[in-house]
Length: 547
Ligand code: GLU
Image 1 (tube, protein in one colour):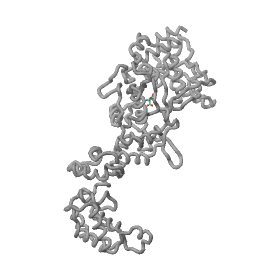
Image 2 (cartoon, protein in one colour; image 1 turned 90 degrees about the vertical axis):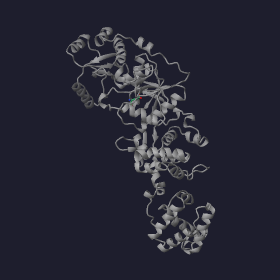
Image 3 (cartoon, protein in one colour; image 1 turned 120 degrees about the vertical axis):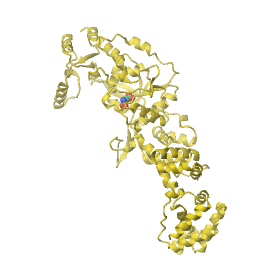
């Protein structure tokens, strides 16, 4: 068959040539070794941890090599598209410090290698589709849904591999007359790749993450263009990543299954194959076994979850880095205050099997991250969070910023900063008692009589002087302890608790509960300093009245 005739028949309006496109999108002038990579999400509106992991890997690889990170939108499936989804993705990733150098933006496209939205690239795909047809490497297939279903059923019954291949590829070698007849009858068609591969053959392949692999050739004549002329992922991937001069394809390893076809396609198109960085899935423990994080079952897959919980962006970023590169934690210990971008990220260190997402570890990392922030920063982030998720608390925080910052400064700075907070949702429980509206009524340990508690509080008030330093203040607490027959000798108490009615710790707890409503609080002396004399006394008196 004269394939050029077939190509002209199928694509009469395509006059551009691959050479013209090669010229229009020249090789990028980047430093040696620069990584050009991209994110190519479908705009479904759901931004998840997997996007962030992929974004972070791509961003680090591009920017630490002096390369380019661009955003291409895979909007070929119009049915799944959610309006505004591209903007949500851009904003969310930006929130996590991942910014694109080119590609789709809020206001359209930016960059010399666009358009960056696949639906706008139909003409480009058709140029290469026509080329493939003219070389006998692709052909139209007029199979109906029913025919394809029947084929599948037959394959199932015969226990054969599924797909359009071998004897099942009924349009592969049809005459031009047959094709013309179908076209004349306006029958819909898809464009299929003519695979020369065989599942008997294998070849070696090197993936940046998975390492050396042995791959079986693809023998299926996959679809390149759907009946509406829109490409499949596979064809768009080859054409786009070639013309956009992608050097590294960072993507989920669910694409490994069709990698043999992609390799074949690049070869057929005479494109240089990019390097592949196939990242394993994010998993979690479910009972004793691991499973992939699922959109349906696991709220923690959605990035909105971390925002609502109040994980600072830095904490999530930091945690993901510890997850991706096992040497990150050591680096962080040696460089506690350096920006995370100083770390030399290596895609080779990614775990080929994927990563176990560990919420407890994230919480731990977050505690460390927050502990190292100064009070001003904590105040800013907490207030930002509260404005969105707890407006009442936000009002309290913003009514008197200096007061809130004094509270948040407790235990900060110094060699061993306190690690009280992991997420902003914990902040109200931690510091709410500083605000009268959130102060809870204390519930004292029943082991002690109301009279004992009252006596302690009365004695405390008798000698309370806000000007005392913490040493004098605590000496007074100890004196009360002795006066009521409790002990200040914790060692002796531990050796024989029954010998004492109570200890200095109990006395402190009575006072702490009276002032804060809780058995646990930041340093009580400091709490009183921040509350001031009048409010401290008023709180203790109010509690005494109710005892
Ligand atoms: N739209 C594809 C996905 O989200 C892109 C894969 C790729 O990066 O090539 O899985």
